[in-house]
Length: 398
Length: 191
Image 1 (cartoon, chains in turn cyan, brown):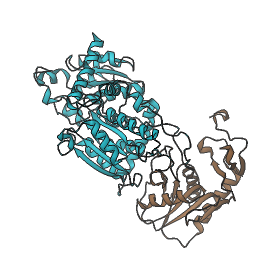
Image 2 (tube, rainbow over the protein chains, first blue to last red):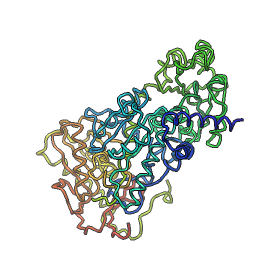
Image 3 (cartoon, each protein chain N blue to C red):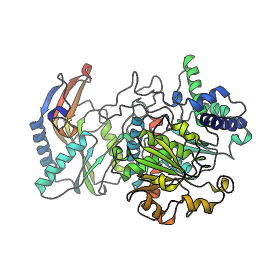
């Protein structure tokens, strides 16, 4: 029954995408959806004939070609991305908030779904690194004229951006783009043609699948709160409370906490916490489902409260919001009673004050929400920097 | 940390400057920095990560001791200012820049371990200028191995080491987890 649920979940996503882009190859998408490790985990850097930078400390690690999901990262890559992001914070605190690192690089932000903070922080991140950033939004783009993702991949490849940041309402869309681009590069290489720019895809949120940079900034926030030591945020207990069913933030965070070796508790009403998550995530790490806040928060170190997506909730997934608030609203009193005195609380925003989280938490000592927003730019700078550099084109001159 | 935990130096690395000599070099350079009276502004030491940070810290401590007062100290990472970012296929590792004093109005002493092409110093100058307008910037290096590609010269040198282009000069310090400090000359094939 659980496996059925899991398959159903994926099928729904497929249909969602297929309806939107009739031309897409089903098999490729299936692979993109399920086997994304093949695309994202390909180590391509630091190999063969690389010109050495003298006198500079280098990471001994391969970054992925694209950032499509947290699931496809290794714990070493996560650690390195967090430490690197931490170094980028300082740039936003300077008087002159710009470094020349990505001068001459092009970043296209394709946001085909509403977004303010993610889009703005990606744009600021690109600009602070001196890259040229271009924004495409849903209504003004050819996507509204019915251009398929496949055609979009071709168009993008022809324009040679260094990084494309994608937000799409269909889960798996960034994977599909990445796979199409990789295929095209392979084809060009087989024909003996030089690939001058390999475009990197960054997933800025795809359907109900993942939102990797949000999870990275959440982990960075914890890392900075706990003495900038990955060991102090590993082997802990984290509760994710609220609308887990619709949340790509939750999915990315689950994988990130698994990489840290943390125990994950999913807390919420049965309608919003899918039972099949236990099957889907069971191999990744320790995970459990709690339908009451008291057992869910017991002894946890970190609490992540998710936004109640009001527009699609009332009368459907929960009888009414008052009842949800009565049972699941995270309040200072509840955290104090159920969790630990030093437990910290996060929220990806925007907040519904007094519905999923109380005012006293928001204004209290244990809230890390302001830091989360502050760290968004640094995380995106690190991601853009690592994807846009160190990807040598063949025959690179010195 | 017991000596077993320390990194060891490969046997074919030739020691050019040893622990005691490095300390003497740094002491002499500290006095030279203080003796130069023609520069205006208060002295501030800025080390270039990674080895330059440790050498800069040592020079800073010596100057503070000689002068009997605290002077500003900062660290810069020049990774984001390199001119070869898009040509290298290796991933550079970024560490934070930390300049806890206003750069404007200070006489900045940049400290690095080995001066070679001058490209690192060019990047460091760009990085410093992003933080303000220093009265002047001077350069102190532990080892100068020649082969400059930019019009850059050091103001304070620990040791001049003539090299050929296929040799390498490396500085290893106790702060980096080595038992002794040393400047080493290495033939290319051993890297």
